[in-house]
Length: 169
Image 1 (cartoon, rainbow, N blue to C red):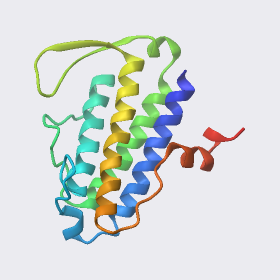
Image 2: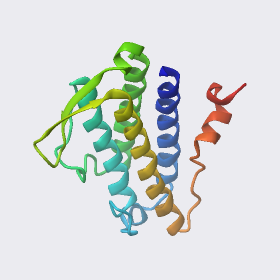
Image 3: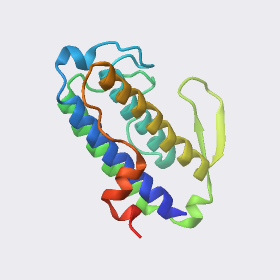
Image 4: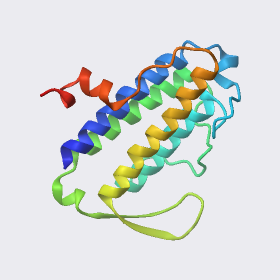
């Protein structure tokens, strides 16, 4: 089962790099334009992805900074956001690579950002949610690029699998 999560951690980093590459081609006005996505702009969406990854990594590891808002703007400049994104992706890959089957079969305890109640959840379904959440909001970023008339990168898992050992027979 660990291989499944190793693939998704690698895919996550790959897709985030591709989105940051595309975002870097936008003007500042385009990058910050409200295009009707849940977090409004590319700026808001990419910051949300980093914020929630930090929140979940804090839940999983008990370490690191975690914002107290889902709409936190962690970095105003894309270059700074990208550097932080790449560091967080390395952290995610390292965390997943360090898991063993016993830990994967375990549980986590955490509190939501929006409520004080404690949740106890099996780790694997939490990881499934986390990676799915990332894909969901990358879809918003993809829509933002499309609505701006810009080229949107291929982000399907299949493309990652074709480019890496993850999908080769």
